[in-house]
Amino acid sequence: MSQADQRVSARELQSYLSKTGITGSYQLFSLVTCRLMILTLDRNFSGDMDFNEFQQMWNVVNEAKAKFMSMDKDRSGTLAVAELQQAISSLGYSLSSLAFHCIAKRYGENGLIAFDDFISIIIKLNHVTGHFRARDVSKNGSATFQYDDFIQITMGL
Image (cartoon, rainbow, N blue to C red):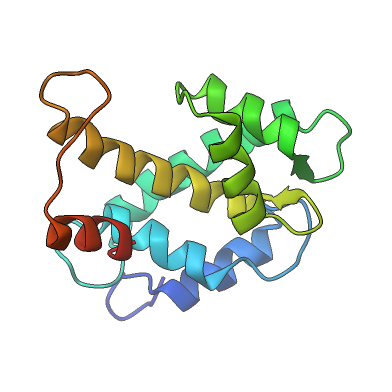
């Protein structure tokens, strides 16, 4: 946190998360994931986090870490596609096998998902699912979007 303003930028968050070793290693935490975390919690659209937003984010990261570790059966520090599918399903998401494989292909490296990518997946799933449910007025798994809404929802993250 910047001493002068008590705010955390994406780069400061990246540095902090990398130094904590939250990923299971001391590799650089993804800057893209840090931006996503800030975007989802930044209620005043400042582009950074205040202390309360940071505390919220830290709780989410720790919950995600616990879920990640519980699914990482071989303790490799990554999730295989089957482990990812279990983790996402246990969070209440019901996705097809094709959707899981698309996610794994997008976020995985050699079929394995790192912790910071797991955080990105959870954030994006939560974001798009919330917007979908708000438009699924009949609660039948079907929603209508205007093109501009779709772009804002998918590209805004």
